[in-house]
Amino acid sequence: MNDKKVVLITGAGAGLGEAMARRFAADGWQVIVADLDLARAEAVAADLGNAAHALAMNVVEEADWARVRQHVEDRFGHLDVLINNAGVAVGGTLEETSLEDWRWVMDIDLMGVVMGCKAFAPMMRKRGRGHIINVASYAGFAAAPGINAYGTAKAAVIAMSEMLRAELKSAGVEVSALCPAFVKTRLTESMRAPDPSYGERVQRWMANSGVSADDVANVVARAVERPRFLLLTHGNTRWMWRIKRWLPETYFRMLMRGVAKMEAKARRKKP
Image 1 (cartoon, rainbow, N blue to C red):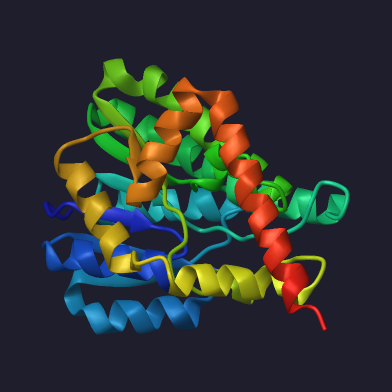
Image 2: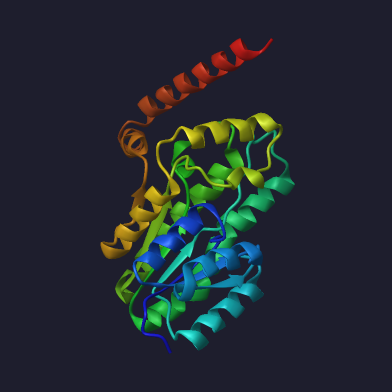
């Protein structure tokens, strides 16, 4: 058995997951780098040296979760932190998004998180401590048009996490919902949308957000040290969340003004 603190991060072969893996490794944790793409996971783990090792897994497969849970039990005997980070994106309105894409994003972004929690919550409950961090998105609060399926999946992750927090509190297990806005990652590589303009806009917003994957990883690390539930990583989303909560109609008017500006800008760009 290993007495080091152990963290399992899904989707850790690139982007935000990789940044979190590097941050935890730098802090002396044993990091399990899990990813659908084993080569990516192995490259990250190799760069981190003895602080990490790689596992291939598909978060929508129950058998993979059972295998990874058994691996953790056999090798370490416990898991201190689970970060359900693996996810995909879908752009488009409700009418534009196919039922196939709805099912795809729900399976990965919601049910993949549910499966992770179900796999490791009993282990943490039995031990009397642990921390589950579910990666949602500010899209789960924003109620913005054009990301209906993605936003719904992320909203469900936030709601599920909030209920899980109440269910595990008496057992000494912490739960957090991480809700970043735009951060430069490889998310658009697998993104599904009605046309390329969706991905192009997301890439521009990622590039101009002013918040990096390393910044988000730092927020996560601090939340493990001093647990809190809602992790909003971008300054503007913190006050927008408060406006939406306290003044929902004001928030909606602000949202629609922003949408109108974007539409007007798009019209001006058309030849």
